[in-house]
Image 1 (tube, rainbow, N blue to C red):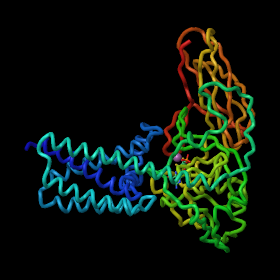
Image 2 (cartoon, helix red, strand yellow):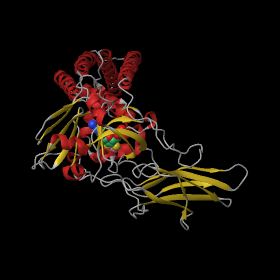
Image 3 (cartoon, helix red, strand yellow):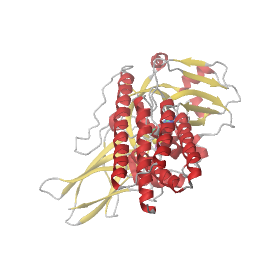
Image 4 (cartoon, rainbow, N blue to C red):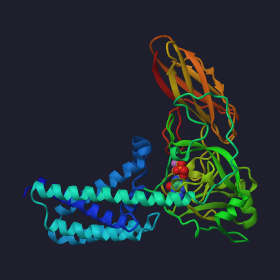
Length: 477
Ligand SMILES: Nc1nc2c(c(=O)[nH]1)N[C@H]1C(S)=C(S)[C@@H](COP(=O)(O)O)O[C@H]1N2
Ligand SMILES: [Mo]
């Protein structure tokens, strides 16, 4: 058997082992691959993660899963090259590592851990009697792929069941109709409110953790006079509606990692008043089931200078699992990754000794505020004329948008018509018509915030302070 054959054979065995492990886990309501994906999010160097997010855009979760499968196959190929006496310990280490990863993943998946052990056993057995010919290789690879696909179907079915259970907790909100903003409907222009199903999803997990709403309680503890434990029903009684845009720090100009929603939540000022923080408390730590924490300085939240909320609803419904069911913290104006955890379990009052998830990953400690941005959603020719409709959305939370301008071919900035404002922290739609001479043109947009901050043209990557630049589209007239 030559080297190439041996590696291919081992890779096929690796695929078979992953498939067997994941199918076993999925049949018992868990996942083995989610744990491995999470290891990647936690330990792959930040610059690599940044490159991947930039490339994958909103398909980062699919890319992670693909990366995990490739990693597993590569691990098998590496093992096949080890001297025989090392293969059993290597397979055992693979099993133990995969099992441990499943147990520390957001769902603490025991079935995932069993899947990891099973995958290691299949791997060891398969490497002993490696596929020798192309037929056996194909059989292993096909079986592995088939089992992975079957596992995916099972996991999705269970996720769907959980989503349905989450929805039954609702409704959540006052159901006041969303006002018209005076900007007509233009195909491609973002609606005033982003449907939850269209809202971007960003987090360190492959899949949302499943939390049982009947057993869930929010605890408020740490450096407080009164420890509190609140159910979803307790929280719903005190919740109010507010409109705000949520923006991921990875939302480079023109991209879709942002959305505008009508949220339903309890003001943090009220919760903090009930709990009565000690004078030594300086941080509010939001702690989630996925082991993730985001902390915010306590003082501005306690006084309401930064209006933060414990959110339990989105667009009149309970939060969907991918958006943090049953509860999350959100402070409009602060980038999503600094603005509070989804799948919240605890609000903990702490002092400055607390260390957050993102700090360990190289991001700055203090919350980053959303830099104002304008996005061009449509730039389309009106039939039979040289006129183009240019329209989009712009945001500058929490102060609000005061103006949006566009410019053609980097000439003068021209103001556009703004839709009426839902709320200062929400996004605002805009629209205009321009006459373009024949040829290729660039169109750029910029926003000015109510505090006078003008979106600047300097391009910057998201890491480490948030993206910069102007959204630019090219059209042919
Ligand atoms: N528990 C938890 N909360 C989290 C995250 C996470 O990985 N885990 N990601 C944050 C990031 S980076 C963003 S941008 C927002 C995204 O919220 P969304 O997925 O509802 O849009 O959630 C934040 N809250
Ligand atoms: Mo994010």
